[in-house]
Image 1: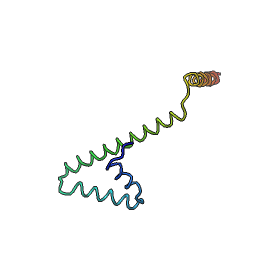
Image 2: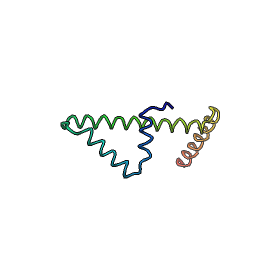
Image 3: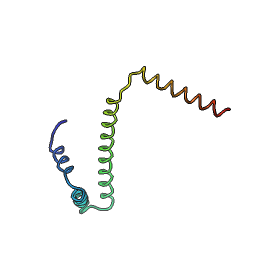
Image 4: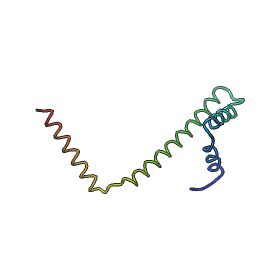
Length: 98
């Protein structure tokens, strides 16, 4: 991971306690909206929501890839699991039909 000023700032923000973390968000929100009209405020708000969604999506995909690496199956194992599940479903359908 490349360390830059934004990464350093992010790590500092993550060390704040919950009260400080929330207060900082409020201050930043006020700073970014001061002097803007309603449409501009909405536009800036949408921008930051998009930034937040991108960060969440990126982090979730990182977790997903790490999970896949930790739980990787070879194709033969996956096929065997699917065959067993199909067999179980067929048994359930047979029981329901009776």
